[in-house]
Length: 253
Image 1: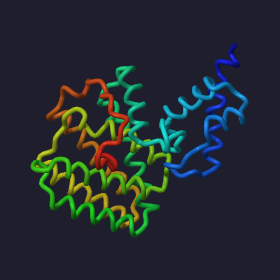
Image 2: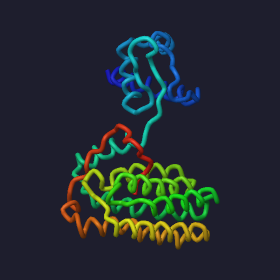
Image 3: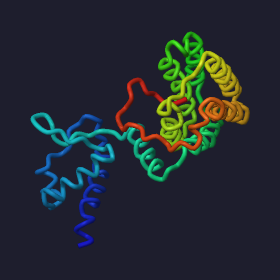
């Protein structure tokens, strides 16, 4: 009985390996149900349970009708953030704990970015800083947040550490504060731009310790903002975020 219960999980694992080895691009069609039933010698209900597991993991999409079928997809950061936010909400983990986690991860990423980043990465950071200087945070809050995300996304990419980049991207969706109603003033904008300039200068100088320290100070500013203007959020449970990609989301603050 135990083996029968776990069979869909076993089939899902085998299908995942097959998908990875096939290197199918997102949007590609996978095998038909009939082909998979014959290949794995399983019943249709067992196969469909296995497919639902992969669907819940963001590996495939199941589309009905002509042109549909089993379609290859790719797990998104939003899906990971949603799963983590549900876990944290169910365990009543407060928002401040998410901020603290980010304060550990992002300076480490910035150290690696200073050491491993390319001149193109640094040029992209400089462009981001310049673009942010043309924005007015209060009038166009979303554009400011998007550019803020862009800068931090470049830092994460420049680190060359894909695992830490994914950890940060997931945590940052939860720690940005948007889901809790945080807003940034013109004064906040000035502080953010100055912090980004210090981080960029340290990265360009290949000074990992200075870059990490600048980022540490920068991300701590978000906690200070919450403590000063949004104190009620410190013990507020982590918000459950959507598993659907937000428009224009790159990466967070």
